[in-house]
Image 1 (cartoon, helix red, strand yellow):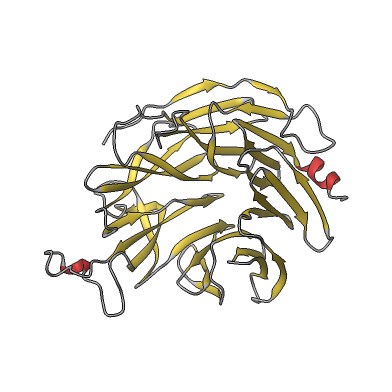
Image 2 (tube, helix red, strand yellow):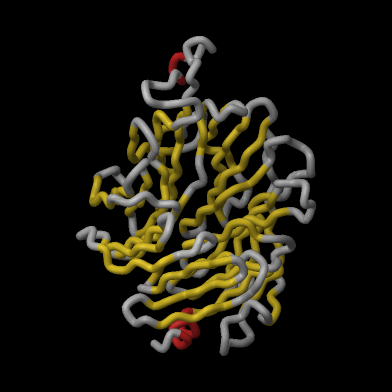
Length: 355
């Protein structure tokens, strides 16, 4: 595996234009240097994955932006195009000053590696790693998710219908499962005394495990929302079950005592303590749940970002164009689109929502 070098970049902030929220001006805006494929924020920072401009390459870099300090830190350099058939960077998480992301590589075997770096130590290091063949059999590390001081990710094992015949009895599919199905999954925190799964290095601790799907969806205030085959579970950082919601989720966002879930046909909002359904908003096929904070739900569809204040019935749209990504923190709203990342302070967002 190739270890990426990292360097601190001098960030150049320019005045906002097309991606600005209606009625705002002179917002901090960063030219990302390419199309953004993933965006996350925590506090007053945002981290993002930016793809190289070569359309034939999945290679990408990782950067962290602090708009109020005018600082950009590069955590991962883009790889040379064509270096690895499985090269790619997918998903990113941020918890305070620590970022983590999924980096893939390999040829006959697909390697899925969780990488992490901090502002103080921006050189990325490997933690958990998985390896699988092209039929989808083997182990996989999944994209990490974070908030505050908590960073977690899923590590799963997918089975082979001919496991015994292929000399891998531990990967043999049980009755009712077929090649590529998840037969075991565990959630790991990037903190602890144990080695991270699939590796002889890293510092991790296991949060929970299951004989089937257990995918991290969202993290907030020390709680983790995880998806199973037919439900969403809310657990603590020690793995204790707080509540189970009988809904199959594509994605989720957690904020205080509210859980937002993107289902096949809607965005549903639940009381995280009682499990009561509070809101259900019909959602077209291309709608993506982006974030949920301070009672404000953020979604995106193509190049349009919509944020609505639940309960008040007020919503506003921003149309930066391209494929837009958005993240909402109490500090404000981050939007990435068309090679630009813009930050709108929360007072401006509240004003647009009539608060």
